[in-house]
Image (cartoon, rainbow, N blue to C red; front, side, top):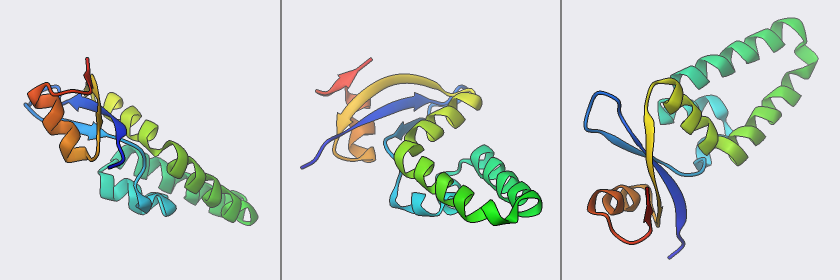
Amino acid sequence: MEFAIYTVHAHPKADHLETVGEASKLAAVPPLWAAYEGLWITLGALLALYAAVAVFVPLAFGAVFFGTVLIAAFDGGSLHRLELRLRGWRKVGIVEAGSHEAAEELFVTGGPGVRL
């Protein structure tokens, strides 16, 4: 089984945890990825960027879209963590696990691979 590093974030006003790893396969289409992950600030920023480029520099739209694909694919986890921080969530730990679900379970139970 392949393990990955996940950060664990706590909701500021509720008993809710969210684990963030690297970007999903949907990162190939950044607006769909952002909507699927519930990253509404990121989605709005992407759509505003695409609209501005389409209006002011239409010939560069393909390059800008490809650039956002690369950013989402290689650094999607960081974008997700940034959005959570902007919403007031706080990072409460780091877990090494095989999946998001396993990472959350390990963090809650205090199993091996948990770093606070």
